[in-house]
Image (tube, rainbow, N blue to C red):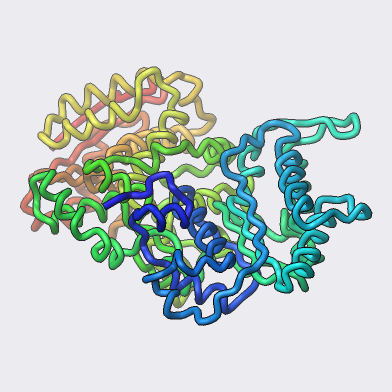
Length: 528
């Protein structure tokens, strides 16, 4: 089996015999039921392949679809003028890069369909090209825009500026206005448009780049198209049955055990209230190609814009995850530096895990182990700013818990905390100092996701600071700031935090830890 890793061209995939997970039934439904669409999906999730497939369909390349679902659905293959622009692969932190990209693109279209000398703005010129193509083809035009938001994400919260008419202006504002002028064509050329799709990571609100135009239908959370990108569990077992068996043999385990590993590591994305499980396609293809499970998707790119945004908010990851939200808080709200949650969700680092239909609220959490470990490690290294790698420490801590070497666990944690710069733990109030230590422990425990970790877990008589479950042991941690370890242990007993594990066959440890706000590390420790 040939895996199209890094190949997003539908024609190349079909002509060269690469594996293709058939999405054409959904594509046919899409093109026959609407005109202007917007789809948000995380990076490397198949958006570019979807755009390429649509391009081949509207160009009437029927032979490429032989044997696929759409081959039996489409009875009247037609060729339309297709206008495709891809904002991938360019660095838009350079002033003028976006303008040059759009200018070159429109100029190339004008060389084919002709240029109206009376049209000067990019929006007017684009609309003129669409009209001329409609007249010459006798059919309306198709517009496909891939990663429409990259020119904004590249410069979001960077403080980069450019000079316009002798005045310094934020590059983010300039890029937004440039895109707004470009996308204004969807209103001016409505009569000349057959189909439009814009893909991207984030959804910006109506006051942004789509201001003043016909609003695209947002299908990002539409149950009909939730599996338009990505791989469902049914598709995984249907298309990749052989590779799964081969991978299981490679790891000397049963097929069912390997399926569970793939599920924990790469599944967990949900794009509608139906909660259909969607696997990360980029990671799966890499796993089957290399016959090795690893963090392929996260290693393929660093979400630096998310780190910049998180630095603007007082909300920590532990306070964002495991909570129910109204959709307006993470879907329809304008993603910006003051409210990073929508961008974290839309970028694929959080996903829907449950929904309360009576309240119309959604539980958000990390989709899978790959994302949890990678994103938390990235945030931890940025937040703690230690000389030592936080990810390496987390692995050592978990290995110590695996064999109940609590003395080593204490020494590792004490040494690491002592290495954190004083400026990072300097807080104004006792509440902030206590929050700092809780968050630090949360980040360390969540960096290695092979075990079950609960932080601030709600029980009948209170919230447990942290519970870690490993195959042979259960650890209940309670923290105190400038207190005593015995006070922490007393709280575990008085609140009954261990009662849910009374019937558990694993050995249970209760651990009281006192942190010192003066030294920044552990001052007292007790275990029972």
